[in-house]
Length: 244
Ligand SMILES: [Zn+2]
Image 1 (cartoon, helix red, strand yellow):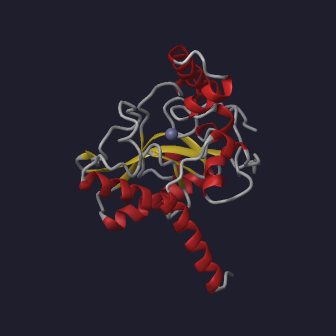
Image 2: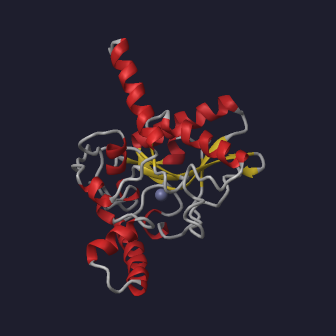
């Protein structure tokens, strides 16, 4: 049991991380030790049938078909966040468009983006290239999706996705996709905050560079909550094959 003072300290700490709105760089994420608690990956829809699970990309189909897989605790926390949204509006539900990503897919995206940036800036060192590329595609070693701890998520009602100002993974304007961008309407800001609050209440870490990306148990989550090690590491998972 936590005494009141400790509870207060936790609330204050969490609030300061959230108010800080910090985006961590590679060096900060690499400081976090990688730990693996061997928690299983689960089909999110089997834990919570109410959450809409629908890929916008087809890159994971060869590995796991159309199912979205996440770590078990992540699925349970998403279920709780979904229930909390329903208390605000019974028509609200979460829509998850990405969960676990195979490391091969992550690496492919990272190299592709790095090559584009290298062509534009041929003088940059490998470290500098990695740092800039990481702003667009997470470096595989520190990425969240490859651990099964990260999700790309939004909220829907009877009319479809709530207006968040941009579509998920629309990188046309990298300023406007920041969670607390000043270049969005009041309604869009309110909708983003609703998503942000419902997930951070379940101890997900937001990624403030993309309003739709949240994670639990990965290095980003550990950095956000001031922890020294992650709960999850990168997994090489294929459906119908034993993992870990
Ligand atoms: Zn993501």
